[in-house]
Every structure is written in C-alpha cells, then in structure tokens.
Image (cartoon, one colour):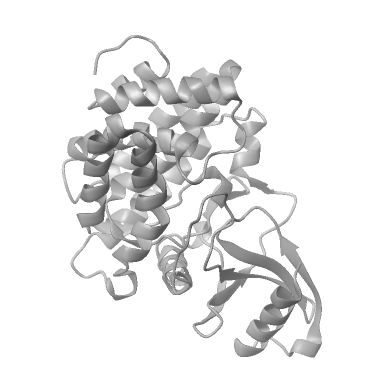
Length: 335
C-alpha cells in the first residue's frame, strides 16, 4: 500500500463525514483491480471499502481513462440498489474532488467471489441465472423514457475503457478481422438503449448467501445491453475452455443465463438482442486473448483453442446462442 492511498483513504473518510483521519485504525489495500485503488478502511469500529479511479490502468499495454468515471460508477451502484437492494452494496458517499467513494465492505462466511467458485469447478447454473435476472431487471428499468440519463452520458469513457482496448486494439492485431471488429465497435459506440454496467464479470460479482452482489461499474454508460450479456457469457465460455472436464455444465450456465435474462427484454424483440449477443461474444473472446486485458488463467493451448474458435465465429457469425454454443463446443452445428 502506498502512502498516497493511506492519505486519500483518510481524506475520503473525513470528506464523507464517516470519521476523522485520526479515528482511522487501519487502511488495508485490496488486490485484484487494474483500474482503481481499493482499500478496506477501519474507523470507529466500522469497516468500509473505499475506491479511487486510476488515470492509467495496470496492464502491459498503455491504457488511460478519465478519473471522473468514478461518479458514473457510484451512480450505477445507487440505481442498482434502488432496483435490486439485495444485489448492490450499501453506499456511504462520493467525492468528486478525490474521484472516490465509500461503500460497505462485503465479507463473511457466506460471501464467495463468483470467479473463485467457477475456477474451483463449481458450475451451479442457478448463480448464472440469478446474475442474469438482476441484470435484466436493471436494463429494463433504465430503458424507459422516465429514466434520468444525465449521469451516464459518457460515451467517450466507455470507448476508452471498453471499445478501444477490447475491439479496436484486437482489430489491429488481426487485420483480416478488422472490418468485422470495427463494425461491432461502431455499433456499440452509437448505441444508447439502456444503462450498461460494462464489466459484468465473475471477478466483479460476490455471492452473498447465494445472492449476487454486482460491483465495479466504472464503465457504466448508456449503451447496448448486448455488451453486458455478451461480456458475462464470454467469461463463462472461457472458463469452459479452461476446465474441459466442466465444459458441459459451464456452457449450460450460458444458456441458463439467457433464459433468465430474456423475459426482461421489453424494449426490443428478444431475438434481435440475441443476434447481437451471439455476434459480440466471439469478438470479446478474442479480445480476452489478444486485447489489452488478456485473462490470466488460460494456458497457451487453451488460448489457441479460444483464438481459433472465436476467429471462425467472427468470420461467420452465429445468429442464435444455441448455435454459438454448439460451435464453441465444437459440436458442428450450423449458425
């Protein structure tokens, strides 16, 4: 932990009226994030989680993003807490000056990180369905004309955090696929259908008593809901490649995710959204191999499998998720 994080954490506690700097008994840096400094702060017998956006992400490639995204993340969490109180952390305030906020510190014997469970071989379809249900409820609530979009008109931030490092950077590494990837990027850039989280990944989802708690919404923007759906599905598929002995239930959890999510799609025909998801998943699969933020757990052999199958699917996209999963599993289905 740096002295800077210690100082900023104490300053945030004071700014939010949660205590005095002299009341802070411990500041413990938390690991795992590449886009923010995160710490547990103990003050007055209470533990808080504080989070500060970083101007440069901790990855091998140069990757910069505006720190004011912290406000959009805070507002996403606040809206999610209104729609699904069990599925978002309790918030204690945000500081624009410090580009940070405080929320509840989520811990306890009934709290497990979904990514850890998946990598350990736990492939309960129920968890995927519960995540999808929460996400669908949030998307549906934010798709109406009464939703206040003011805090989420940050398309440039989403471009810097997601479209450029995932799709456009990957397009630069695969010139033959660049037209398809750039077309996907342009469509995502132009979309403003509903409120998008932007990082619905198992590493950002705690399961508390079996209920998902969604975190890390710093990519939040008005956008295309297909991104959130495809992003989460991509992580489940990558873990199916990583754990070949569990690939059948992991791919089944992708199907369960869609079954739970689809009933919430009221803003357009669900089949149209499904087609966009099926087209985006392979692009994100390739991006998690050859983009700016590759997943860390795949072997070189597994990366080669992902690369080959995603490239084939980008060149000849599936239009339905069952066909996509058949081809990902190499079951020979047509699109």
